[in-house]
Image 1 (cartoon, one colour):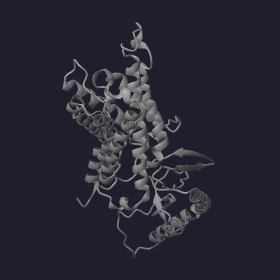
Image 2: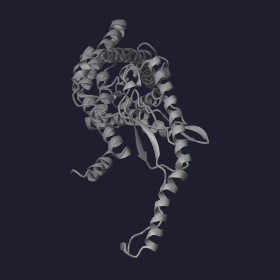
Image 3: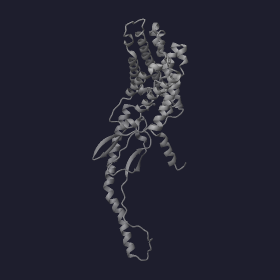
Image 4: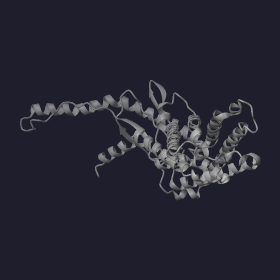
Length: 408
């Protein structure tokens, strides 16, 4: 969910045309090289023949006894065009196109790809007929402190998007919780099945999961659609966002949560305080350790789903199974709420718990507040470490790179 480089339609169209032009030139060059292959082999073998004849006729020249004068077969190298740097905004006029030798099977004619907007592009592979295969490339790690972000309008636009998304998220979900408690209130509804009327717990879980799905779909292209300090913290640990972006995202999310719950209180004045204000509190019968464990596990499920749904390697490998990233994330939120609503009311989002506690402002909500910060952050850290160092084997890759470096 990191910030992507802005792209323009006309610019991408021009890049595609340049790409097709270079591919045609490359295929022509490869065809000429294959036609020259017999000539090159004959040029290599001819001096060896003359040398062997000269050795047989001359007794004065003494050659080493271990001299191997047998003909050597040489495979023609396959070449690819590798742009050394990204094209400028005005087009690929500043590309340094060099020929790089690579070992490739003789039956495969390689192509080249453009890396743009930190999204893996298709790699064209041709032999008699062309077909397309997905490739991927991990974006470089975000700098720890990127001061240049503070000078970009896209950064402030992302902050506004996070603020608005969290505001809408809290408004919809907290209003759903209060509406549910109002419907099951025995003083208002004395029917025997009052507890089963209305949206019930299943409806609350759908409200949270469905709202996350909608907001991620709308905001992912602008800010990454974090809407959760725990998600932002996990992405920061994985070097997907800088420290400045992570901190300001969390501030925007908390402010948005406060404003969203404030709107609910303004619209439901007669019900807000009576039905708990949608604040997260540890349910009676559960100790703080149980609540903390539930928040850790729930946050791990959510953040792990975020990493998996946005993994460029997974998207390339499973390109035949198109999946909209907000969908599994929304379902993860839904399932976690089903499991943890009876224990903590389900936090897994420190901004959601903090915003409700600020507006509700009761002692019980503040006494349990630390659970809804420590638990999600621990779960997010475990999920980030599991994805980066276990599933993606970042530690093994780093160790291999360290051992293969001759200067170390």
